[in-house]
Image (cartoon, rainbow, N blue to C red; front, side, top):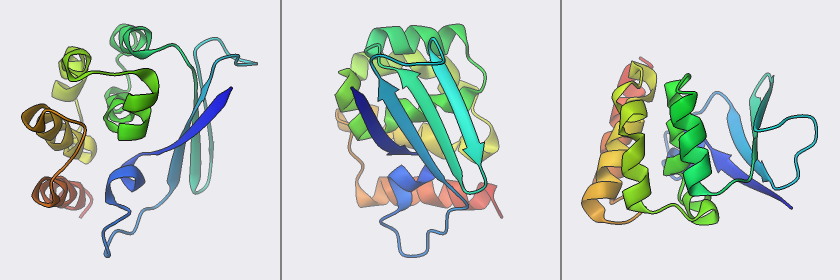
Length: 142
């Protein structure tokens, strides 16, 4: 079975009126992948497809920690639909702190989202938290 989930900045900021993304990123989780063992990325102008073996939360976290580059791969774990699909808990999310700590300036907004989830005790953002993350996103791209 394949599950397709919107990811990247669109997953967090599409609801904001002035959000103008440069591309659309998708994650596809596949329980029987063909042509790759764990992960494959395909990019064309305006679209990126990240295909992952559907392994469950602990296995995906283990893989991310064993292959920590690029650090921005932590972003997929912050997508509520992705987290729900893989059965991710906030306790498991905390294991990804090393990737959060290593984020570059363009992806630092993800650390605001991560911290907000832990503070809220849920994979949700308040309007103020989303605005803070978006402000960080915009500043890194100006």
